[in-house]
Amino acid sequence: MTGTKDKLFYGLLALTAAIFVYLIGYIFLATPLAQLQAGGLAQKIFYFHVPAAYAMYLCGAVCCISSGLYLYSPTDTRDAAARAGADCAVVFGAMVLASGPLWAKKAWGVYWTWDPRLTTTLLSVLVFVSVVMLRAFAGNGEAERKFASALGVLGVVTLPIIHYAVVMWGGNHPTVITKTGGGLRHPAMTHALMVGFLAMTLLAGLLVWCRTRLTLSLSRVARLEEQAIATGQID
Image (cartoon, rainbow, N blue to C red; front, side, top):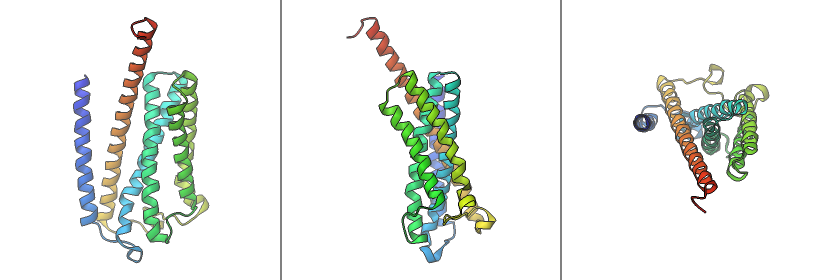
């Protein structure tokens, strides 16, 4: 069974790598330039920036659902999945917060402005960072796990606020995908964005899977050590 899982993992890894190679080539060779007044090429960050935000939502949802299930009925697998979701949400959140300012500098003339969507994104990422820090430094007892799970459920509440921040509070952040925001004016742009979503979804799945397996392995090793100490096999 383990061998089958490993083959599936490496198969998905190879597929994800191939899609990313295709995506990068397609973005820079096939998609037209946009926002010529803002540097042209800067707009191509969009094809990574938006899918990375989507992947952050997915990982946040994994953290929330697994945390809720853990609070209902604690298991190591649910705890590991919740931890993996928070870790990966931070990774993709960092991608969003790193790529966004690079585009903003060309579009707005500044790297950062306290735009509603940017601010709510930062706050959401900080919530998941707090979950990661809590799990890393507060111990691995039952109380610490439950507190981190409760925080993980809370973290996903902020994600819909990010999505609707532009609608509710306005701001400078563009709404490119919808027709009211200008839309994707060329079929190649739509294709690139869809491939970007696929690539980031696969990457998110692989990272969550890998982190979950690692956490479960570390939990088993810790339990074996505790049993060995309790039975006097090691000092």
